[in-house]
Image 1 (cartoon, rainbow, N blue to C red):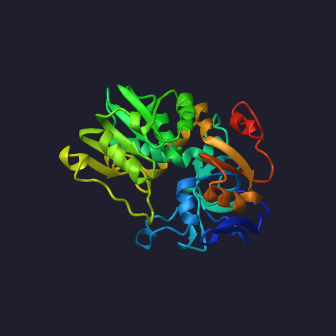
Image 2: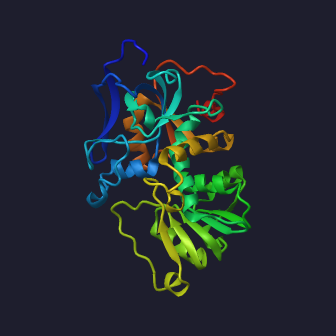
Image 3: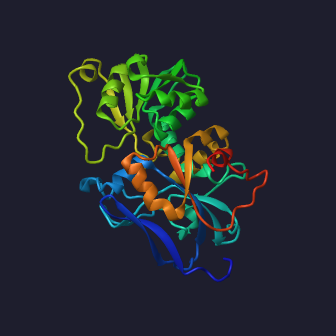
Length: 349
């Protein structure tokens, strides 16, 4: 453990009431054995889940299951929530100080965490891009759940952050076809950058072997059932929170013996659970971020001090984003060939 004067306070974002959040100062403990003090460089807003928390819409029945790994407080609030954080270790066991890390930590400028909960970021992954690690992990888990095979016909319904991530990973598979499906024609630009086919739901091709549903809408799930081939699987990645969903189960679902399977990142997919760990899955996810194509998902930046307003703008629909990045004050990580500055972020300044 390195020995230096540790900061004694930190600032964190808390959802304090329904549709209200604020920055709060709190005590920061000194790191103990096996722990590290991390200074945050960037965090990402996971819009779908964090807007549910902001709206106070987490169902009480699953409140414990939906806790983030380093969450404090309880739903609906006050609660400190978030899980896309990138920082640099300031103090810690030998080999850790100076290491850039990803952690499933809430939005907070400094924090203490067990080193076992930190994922080392490879030198050729920029810090701002690394906030996507948790979302790539979600996509990896869904692919393990679905098990796509050579020559499969696949549709991804919903071209938001999660659906886009699934399509990004699938684009390297030897599939017969892959379509990214969305109501918004503007998402075709995303599909073109990823190099995958785009389709409006009315024009999407049916008889799919696998359909990944990521739109979090009843209509999207209905269309997913229609696109699935006989006895095929629909992998449901949406979280509906406290919203009810009505489906025409007497149509395609029943007549064609379809399956709907939930994919949720809290545990490793059953097909890999005995041979993979959560930590290993995170290491795989961050290694995939060496590909600069992922920069397309970083659609804006704001300083940490503006985070409460940014969350409200996202909730009100005044800010359109796939992953909005929060930038923290402090010393910049030096730009080197091994740690390049993110070109997508530069374009947004």
